[in-house]
Length: 610
Ligand code: M6R
Image (cartoon, rainbow, N blue to C red):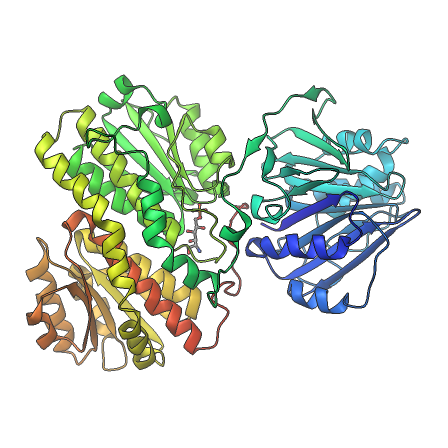
């Protein structure tokens, strides 16, 4: 985790540029923040435990005379959050400063070696070894010193380094942590993610593992770690800075929930052709012959993306009739892969940087399985390493909780499932058309649900005081139940569990009393009657029940305490229409409990460490 940013140019408001950039990266970590700027002869560092706004407040009277600097927002891995462990870190001479995202696995050995040669460490972080190595390797050229130093590092890093000896230069390097450069007119930037530089430029260079970059106000040169110059394609980003702002909403989470009709349209855009059928061949790049012969699919993902994977399983098995296993990446990576048969691995990851998912992808590639990534972030590691990519095109998601990216993932999976079914002749064109037409209606259905926000807010007020919740569903309703529980946990800190409703009798029903409400996914479908029986069982034990049910279902109203109605859709698409009201329910409870819904405690947006 952690976010880094760097600037070199002609503007004299370096403090504002760095802090503004860091605020766009705060989703990557927010337990401390700091900046370092180059003046003519020295490096000036300001850093502090706490939010970026705390640092900003502390620096309110500072007027740095500098046009080059680096910044960092931290999510601690080595060394507790404290002023001293905050980045940037400096060397013994205070002539070099570094910010770092990642983990240096061999930092203990390196630290011992450096200390034995007389270096004095100030912090408990793994990062500090980097800056002492640079100090040792410096022979008059910052780039060379960084290149020599990174070769000693094991682990993951994206770094930005400044030196008082070259006050208009920033050197960056990446290995297994994201780093981009923003190219401006007479100014250049480095950052962990594109939103940090979007206000200034849309011209982006995405660095690969094993690459370093030297930026000055007038140049940006990329090298491999052996110092060979590399030519890089400049990426033109189409989304603008406005897309990464709150646009009048109180919180990013609310904005992102309300963006869903548009993001779903964006995921669908260009993928349903004039003849009304889906064609993904130009994006997916994995040969049609391979897709036609598939015997098995393995989906790897974490958190919300894993639940989207469960939705994908149901859709692929229904439409394309291929068995699908859905694996949590952090488990998958430590089990042997059964490298048999024609298998496709699908990696679902909005950030495209989740460490466990990346390792799972690499394992799959090693045994020869083709890998399809479903990321949101363009140019992310997952996108670059996969054999084929199906972007979700949901735009930047700043709130730590996944909302719009999950519904976009579901839509990408629905598209893929139908495309696969068509390639393999497992769906007649009439039936396929019906499902594609309904897919196109999903943005409207989500708009209808969002227009009912006041009712959901009222329910949030009624239930915000409870300390425990169960979210229950069966078949297509189960992934939505899991996701409802995860959202409530991470945003409101209320204990919640997602559970298969049919399993309640096997133990968890013992928990139920009048203080333990259950939220049932009870939309129309094959298991509706079974769900009604499960609701009866809870009611018989005095449990309170909120049902998420289909418009027009008056019967359920008689049975439960409260109903959240959603419009009818095919059962396979119900996870999408049922998670949206659960996102809102969570959001409002979070607000009622006065919590920071965009940055819940202990979490970071992108989990780039194991
Ligand atoms: O970037 P990814 O989709 O790979 O992230 C996966 C999870 O870390 C993520 O979904 C996480 O569970 C969120 N906190 C969910 O809101």
